[in-house]
Amino acid sequence: MTRVAVFPGSFDPMTNAHLDVARRAATLFDRLVIGVLNNPKKSPLFSVDERIAQISGAVAEFGPHVEVVGFDGLTVDFAARSGAAFIVRGLRAVSDFEAELQMAHTNRKLQPGVDTVFLMSALEFGYVSSSLAKEVAQFGGEVGGMVPAQVAAALRARFAPPG
Ligand code: PNS
Image 1 (tube, rainbow, N blue to C red):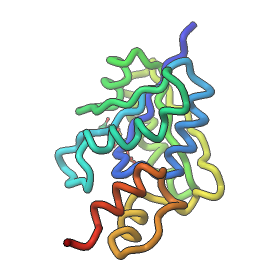
Image 2 (image 1 turned 90 degrees about the vertical axis):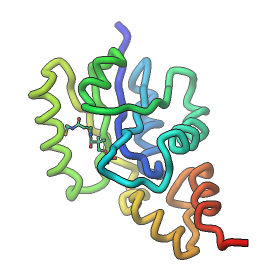
Image 3 (image 1 turned 180 degrees about the vertical axis):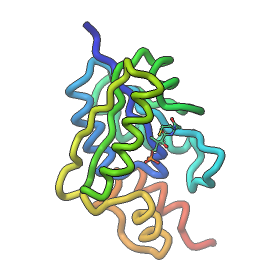
């Protein structure tokens, strides 16, 4: 049996907490499809294509069974299109749990054949978030320990002083 999972998210940008979850999920599943949500309600710092390129670079070493794609609409439909029976999500702290529980129940109601699998992010990345990394980078702080190298470079470039 081939076990396929999707790992959906905004990933604007991917953090080391996300990367840690992806690394561990890549060892649990035969195929892992990381999905970057194209959310028309949000105005992201990076385009979906930029995020796909950053994440692809960061996860390349995990193996060819890990793919990165963009998606629109419902996560359960993205899972169905990908042939996935599992949705992977990371939990950094108890504060993540309530929203994640609600999403997991909603997704299971929408598509009972798809289960959500939670992985606890590594303890050292429990404080890291995409918005925090963007804020630190915006004001010239060092984001090297918070995000993958590809993302740190993209953040530095995006917030580099003009000229
Ligand atoms: O990285 P994020 O922003 O925490 O990811 C949230 C995401 C993309 C997993 C969630 O917003 C999502 O699944 N959006 C797609 C729309 C959907 O399926 N909504 C119903 C499930 S709650």
